[in-house]
Image: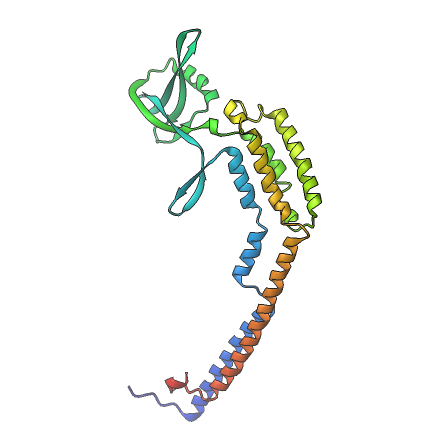
Length: 295
């Protein structure tokens, strides 16, 4: 294809305009680098190093007794559950389905059958797991309701026995722990002796607090009480790891070193940009918009 003809003066103007645009773009890139703009991955890493939400979230899941489950995409926390055999009954008038578990208990050599409501499903299909303390209240109201018997079925319900603490207990412990797992802890300056003193005082205080209130905080069975020691130890070890990041101001030093390296990289990038600008300037002397080989 025949190239279009441009007068010699117009061709020179095009060369100059393109050269100026390239020069401005390079100057802007160099200015951004020299002003201390850190790469995005560096900022994310520093933010991650000082992040406390993930630590607190993990502790909260532990206190709630949540189960760790795995998929191809990774792991996640979920409410502890169990499968129980329940009798299915439906209120034809309202469309609500009730799952009632039958439990046999021996009392003075005689067998007594108790019914515990474990789940309710409304007409829209929404599920509600009924807590044991509310079962008697709901079952009492159903005595005068005509229900259709639909047989038996295994259903998945929340396993309260696997939860060492109730909502009150979890909230109280998280309120205390959140005062220790902070960015200020990471960026402080502690000696190992001082950390040992803090952990000793905290361990005694947490132990006394739980010992005086364990029933009120949800430890109402032998199985839950067996988690008493491991619960205190896990909390203390997690908090201790946060404090040990601050031995001799180690976390401060780590972040400062990273900032210095990042700034040095910025200066190097700026010098590299200047060299590229010089090369580009030399290249534009022979640049011709009508000759692809000079682009």
